Image (cartoon, rainbow, N blue to C red):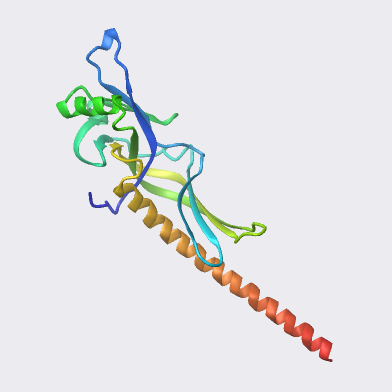
Amino acid sequence: MPAKSDREYRDLYSVEAIEPTEESAESKRVSGQFTTYDSPYMLYSMSDETADYEMWEVVDHRAFDECDLSDVIMQYDHEGRVFARISNGTLELDLEEPRMTAELSGTEIGRQLYEEIRGGYTTKMSFGFKVADSAMNREVIDREGMKPLVKVTRTITKISKLYDVSAVSLPANNQTSISARALGEGVISEAREEFMAARALEIHKAKAIARAKLLSMEE
């Protein structure tokens, strides 16, 4: 599926079937965690001859406080048919956890997806969202005997729209990895330029100090 440029995707999370009881024998419910709060996860990393670079991301526990949740849907790999949705009561969100619960018994494809999740063929999920506000923190970590680590942490403080929660075919499908990698490459590229500029300035200052010491010795 072509990446939608107005949203981001993450697929770090799990989905599982809820076993029906005698009272709900016809129920086909699934539940899954669609993100985590205040727990950093690494989005992207790279290295060059001078340093290692990492981009981390964390979702603030209040990021969904003003989020538009008016008609979130459940899909498969963020495309095609809708399996459940907020507006008809077949999809529920618990933002305290945060988790989603979906009732898939309403359609044939929904019941099929339930059996795939129940059987362990589909175990991961993702969500599509739009960020309204975030903060970046950059730090250079010196590591003895190793290249320095340039670490960028993005804290998502406000999500303006949650589009979908999706069961996904692979732990990292093409859609989500393209989204995260594109973001990571851009952020790390900026951090690398800043690091290289600072490193060049340090070298320049060190050379200037060395020259000044040499001149004073000659005098």
